Image 1 (cartoon, rainbow, N blue to C red):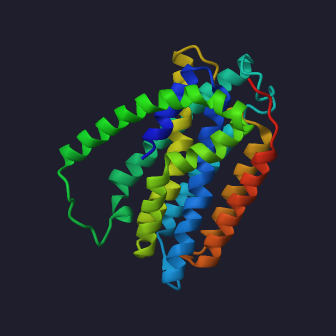
Image 2 (cartoon, helix red, strand yellow):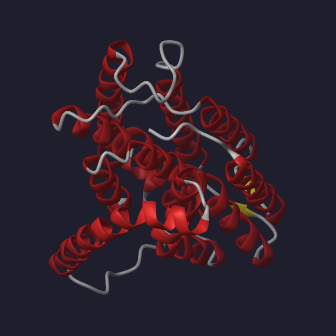
Length: 284
């Protein structure tokens, strides 16, 4: 589900566009957590008065997102976000990445083995394609994405110069929306069919996967390729992420959703996007 983020982030990291990598990672979380989840609640709520969802899965996902936020806070006292060569920040980021990936492995065991019954779909539909055909298609599409993402990364500097749009806004807002458009539409469409557990699995589950797997994977990839990728993000972005997780956790405290909660989440995303348009960060 997050193959686009992984491929684009690795390509940008190898091109030393660390700021683009940071922005695209945290931007994908904002997009899924607020825009997509908000769209699910809003458009699903317009068709259904109230929609129920699995509170256990929602609580687990939000708790894991909070853990991801804590990992982003850990390096902040030791250096500015653009001081990527600070050894303490690198060590903290790399060890935190290992712990996050370990936590993600435990989540998979929880979902697939020990508590699989909590995530079972009662209205399970027959697959329209064999498993091997789906996997082959996924591999081919990922290969095409890898080729196209190389052109995308190379064009970022020219686009910024010609339009005046900052790399921060491109990574935080534009890339996540464009790169995950199909995933966003899928989540909203299943929410309108009153399958909120599936919709929330796409939206919040994607956030958890980015926070606990994709971001740590990029940090460890930077370690392996001698690129100083850390978890030390700009403080403004970390604060907004923590506030967003708090807002979503409040909305999910009651295992029923409605269109007003969806409007709240989408409004929050628009306000954050406006703030990022004016955000000034050191280019490094």
